[in-house]
Image (tube, rainbow, N blue to C red; front, side, top):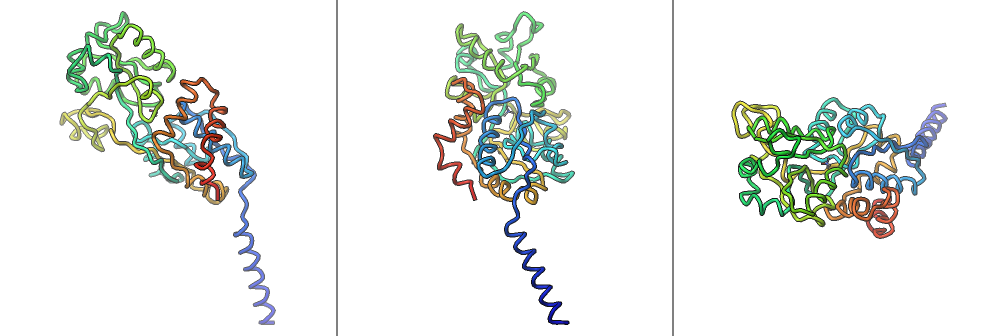
Length: 314
Ligand code: TMO
């Protein structure tokens, strides 16, 4: 009897072990979010294609780029391929603190997102990149609608860059206009290029734009953690938002905590993804310069870089 029970015990243990060893990914679709800038959309399709090649099913959902962290935490969305520190660090950290989401990896990239100008702007305002020099040149950026102030073209509102708060905190003679899309920013730079009209717009790196338009970021007071919440941090002791964005930011990859149990193979692959600045800029270029659809850009990139993505397979 005792012997029989032992036999049963080890058989059950063996069965459990076998189940764990061969635990297959769930057939439910892995939910991959898409946002409103090209590299994020292309890298999301690349990873989706890799998961599909492993036998997984994937579904793409277009989501707000801030609210996505709450959706991941709750398991409604499975991952996020581009967590930029400047734009999304605060929302990511808030979701991590509530629980349900973690960093599954990081790209081998250094990021910056801030006010930026093409090189011809500096010819008209030689004190750049200093923000005070920019402010002294505000008249160069006046438009018929800007009420006599300099116009800054910011990104879409969901990137939540707090540009107007920064203008107010630093006492700048600028107004912020938010672009409806990333494409509107590229159109603005392209139009200004023809007449070498000075412009200052939101831009970021890694991006295709750096290969097309030489330019520089405006140097605001150096970013310090807490600048946007604690008046004591930053240039003025009684202001928040009185500093620039991180100049050497991270780009992480986020995952729902449940992903590693529900889709263990896909999760392991996800943890191996780590792209460089050049690779991320190339993905954006395929769409924003070469005019490809993101799905085609992803396939083109994979055809050109098989050694990169095959190294992510288990
Ligand atoms: C959110 N972005 C990377 C476009 O700055």
